Length: 176
Image 1: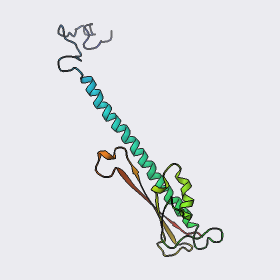
Image 2: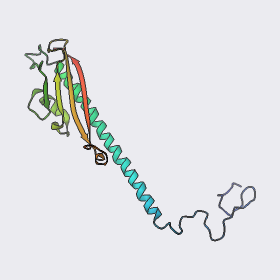
Image 3: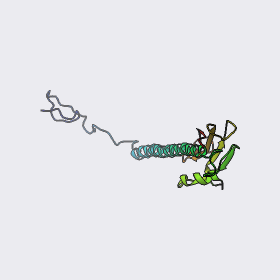
Image 4: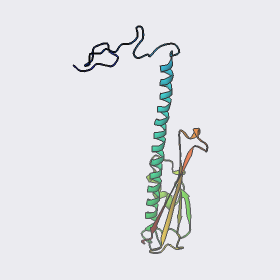
């Protein structure tokens, strides 16, 4: 015979019985001062659970925007690499002057990158193209920096403006 629960009055393998004082429960759940305790405990656990859920969603949105910012910088660097001094007549050469635009501007860089944003606001992305070697000829470099930020739902609980600044930089060699 298998042993029963330790607070059971049924005999166990050893034959002993475990008893509880008369009128007392083996698992006291109610009593003086316990009225509404389950409600308060549930409310506190629900608050912690909701904070964790919203924090997880916030983090996933920040990571998505961070990954997208890197993708935008890499794509812009690849585009700038094929728009060097030798790109004409197939394409308009870019550079070597520093260019800084948002994706909502009317500019060849913004016009090529804007379709990649999907549902994100193009005005939130600042693109800076620089030619650190001073020219846009073959085998010189182009550096693209994309700057944006992501607002967070829990940002009002912490000091600051409630948004996470994001920046990505990509460097490429000009091929045309």
